[in-house]
Length: 331
Image (cartoon, rainbow, N blue to C red; front, side, top):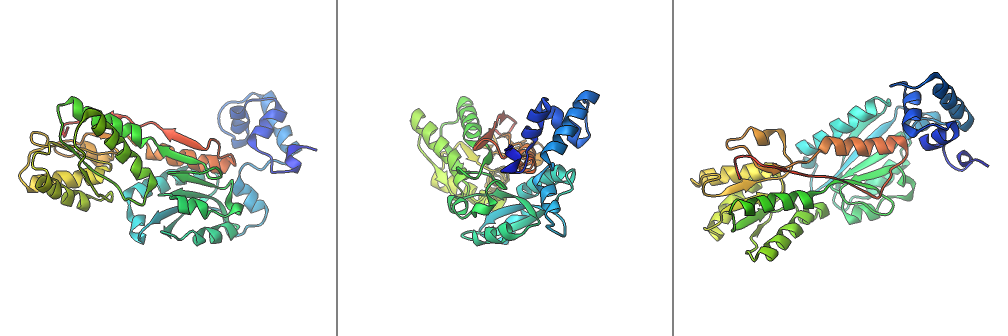
């Protein structure tokens, strides 16, 4: 009995039966790129033999899911305002570019904290071919219904059943903090992200480790990824630690708010206080001074997550994308 008798055939099954590489099979099926006539015949025969349907979206249509097929980007947050986050827009846009080519629409949905029951409704919706979770927590992962397994990935933390696509923000934060130290900064404060968000805790752990290794004081301020909180944090830092000489925020938006707050207080950047962020958003290179930060390939991460779902093969449990220092005038 063939593998296809137990489960829907995958692209790997087609490639194996045809005796070609996965990339060749993909090009033939998609009708893009070069493939020899012989390879096309082999792949076409394998598709017919296995009854292969290119992706979960198409299989949903074959089953009569009705109305069209959607990839749902589900965003966890304390309020629906999270849907206005430019980061979320970048994820949705990048996923849409991948999904449009497969004839799949992309929908955006807010999940309130503790609202994993919303995932049950998505699991029951036959038009949903896959779900991309953003701002994932352990509680949310625990609430993913079994019927969604294989059709859900996380941009953030993952689990044994939910693969993760994420930025290595620990390494990126390490690079930024070492840069601040190398430029002579010794009284470095940090503005964090939301405490409920697990992936936001990795940079904090990195900061604490590096400060401890260097014998420097820890100066941590709460943040929420917004510029407004960064502006407030700058004022708090100046009052609590008048000798502060650098402020690192794990969000560029927050870092821009920090710069505004320092400017309000008549503090010069970087002469008096250096400022650095994380994400390398487009605005980071246009500010005066331009913002030192770390790279965050949001588009590549979202595209990889969407591609894995459409291929029906969310692969490795964790796929981390590298983050690198982007040094500019602010630090």
